[in-house]
Length: 346
Image (cartoon, rainbow, N blue to C red; front, side, top):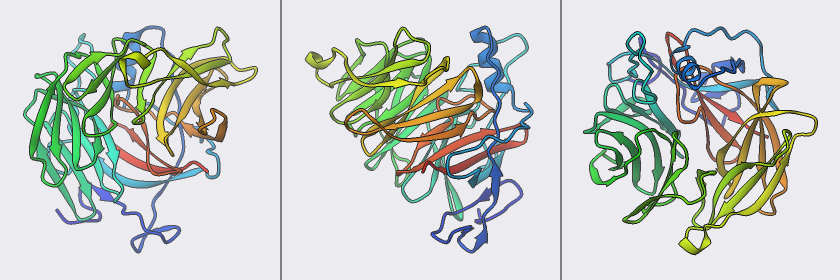
């Protein structure tokens, strides 16, 4: 397909010229967000996966800017430049993330990688074309990039499949009996971390596949450390912990204490790594439509703080993913289609 705007797709390649992208005026979008805190897990999944037409009315301020750059816009469907979305049958729980996009990443060159579970392919949106890498599986979940590989979570069979980034050729598979997969991190070409939505973390070390002994660990780690978040017996604080990769290093250690004074924390997760240290996302009861984002230095002290909107739309393992410091990318959607946005946290 040709680059630029088509009937279904708009690609906005990023250039160094402020306010423009490759000679085209940058489309900008107000940061807006709203979250409904549901009483039950069933309602939470349904609202996130198929609450596509939820109204967004209130701008959310973001540290340093109140707008984000639009990187990619597209619609739902079965064409190469579209993403599939399949509503559940009446009265049936949605099978997230296998009834819509499974996950997304943006590589160093600005290409957007998305798993299209409905159409059973990894789609790579580059300026001027879309590459399709079909995957032999019943469904596709999250993905991540490392070295020359793209690692993809699969359903039927359950596990990970490694594709060559250059042409999508399948290189190997790793069986992994996780029926409710969430976020994936490829630490390197031999080590992978996969969040189990049923609880816990799967870690892959070469040919060894197991659940991590510390259930609070998240799929966020370096070659030396894995990170997680635990409750601190205080509604306004959480502990960020770490463990090593060796079996004898799995006792957790305190990395940082995260405090939000006089606020009740209702949600936390690790966004990912930048400069080899984690960002933590926090939602409080007073501002349910906003993530407070904290980046920690190597000493465990907060080095940066920013705000991001809680994005709505189809369910994803992560609506925000880390890019090169200080950039993060977000995925938002509605009944018409999807948008990938780029935001600087500075």
